[in-house]
Amino acid sequence: MTDPAPTGPPPPGAHPRRTSWALVLALLVYALDQVTKVLAVAHLEPGVREPLVGELLQLHLIRNPGAAFSFATGSTWIFTVLAVAVVLAVLWLVRRLRSTGWAFAFGFLLAGAAGNLTDRLVREPGFARGHVVDFLELPRWPIFNVADASICAAAVLIAVLSLRGVNLDGTREQRSARGAGEGSRA
Image (cartoon, rainbow, N blue to C red; front, top):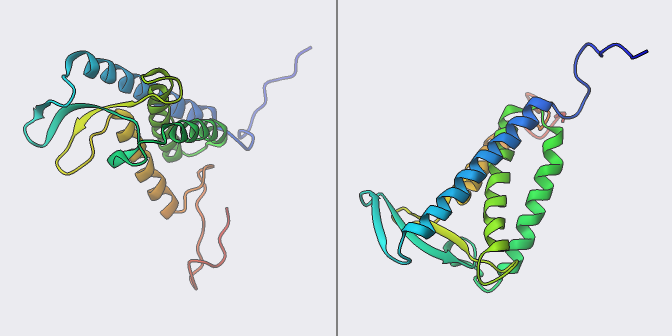
């Protein structure tokens, strides 16, 4: 004899739909990142700018061993380790999601970290030292890719959600009338 299906509110923890949203978004953005990098490598000449939207957005293929602004170009392996840590942390945290905003933030963060991690693992000059394919250029901004844009979108969402006091479970921190630092609940 089987037990009847449970009724009532879902148990504390992850909300499968929010977790699914995060993972589906991550897969879609990751796929877009990988496809655009393959197309960029196949169709762009390294170092040559091609206007996409006039001077506003240009295609400019480079291989980046470092981070934004070519920071720490000799430490590619550190970025590989950091990307692995981010991917694992997001996969652990995404199980607790009950907030749509956080689902989008984690979906973007997971896609971006995994997209650039893939480059570091499979591209030249070798495993865990690969250079990231960047090909989008805005005026006075470092050349970037879809994964980088996804990480930036995640950062903005995380900042907004944090400032608004939205927790992973969708609840909001309550602030007392006497001060923002008093009487909050998680």
